[in-house]
Length: 286
Image (cartoon, rainbow, N blue to C red; front, side, top):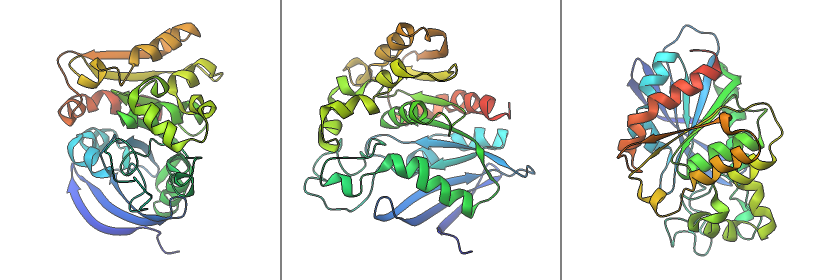
């Protein structure tokens, strides 16, 4: 069976290979690019950690600047770096702002027109892309998968984990948009992508945590104390912590405050070890 992916480049790094891939997405109706890091390992099955990137980003940012591959290589973990939205759909207004439309898919399935035709990032990340990857690279272990993400991708990691706990062993987040229904970024995105305001809570990590009925959690979050978006009320990490306390899960959410760090990939790369090791523990390799 032929691979659904085109390999556009292979980069040797930390003993493994970073693959620059592209493929045609049925869910999104366009060609999508992504990065996959395959560690050098003798294991017959390789656990997988998805890294979801933030606003304005692509799958290149985490792969090239996040310093995840070093730690993934150490623990024999494959890294998957998807893109953040469909590309080139040319809906009216799609490219007009940096925090909505292109590069700002918010890891949800849109229900409002015209976005509902192809802005289906939740389906892409949780269903289509994993299915294609496990078909093309059978050494990837579909039973051992974790999520991490930065900013909008932190929202994605937390919300997708809480919505699909059967798919993932763990979730962690760098400076996540943790309560999007109450911040400008989330309100702009949800009002555009979703048909009604009643749908918003279905994609908000803080609200999802309040209604979560599953097994005990072990969610790990880092955030810089000098993060301007934290200070401006875009992240609302404290609301997520308060929700955990409200439902008796305060011990299941750990937040590490990173003194003096901002929102950039200088911060992400400084704490990628913590996040890979959090996943490694749940994936059974640490």
